[in-house]
Amino acid sequence: MERKLVSIVMGSDSDLPVMKQAAEMLDRFGIGYEIDIVSAHRTPEKLYEFASNAHSRGIVVIIAGAGGAAHLPGMVAAISPLPVIGVPIKSSNSIDGWDSVLSILQMPGGVPVATVALNGAKNAGILAAQIVSVMDNSIQTKIIRYKQELKEQVITKSNNLKT
Picture 1 (spheres, rainbow, N blue to C red):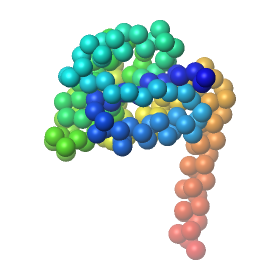
Picture 2 (picture 1 turned 90 degrees about the horizontal axis):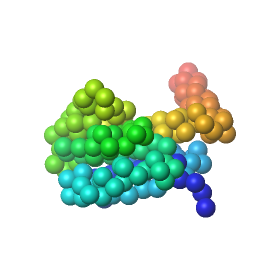
Picture 3 (picture 1 turned 60 degrees about the horizontal axis):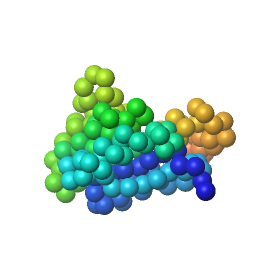
């Protein structure tokens, strides 16, 4: 069984289309993860249980996505000793996503949440992989290769414009 190092949580199943982009990046880098729905508002007991125990289960980083009031990432960060990456999600009840961005970004001192762009779960997956790579050189090698691929794509596109 593959060791799960990253936990991806979201406030609702409506967040899954965005949050699965983080899972796709973790798959690309060969990093084991778990994924679940943990609502800060509708399942506070489950939130507390999850955030209190993730580190004891071997999780090393948490990606938490939420829309609207977006309390999930901050509440996880308040409880867990692990790094938390927040993904603000533009939801159906969102104010163009700004409420989610500000709810996750504007954390008080002492409770950090690394915040990616609105609907930026892909970057959250990459950032989680970079955190994991600190303890695993094989993951770091994959990230270096990925960044090289990005560079080559830009060079190819640039050259195509010139022809």
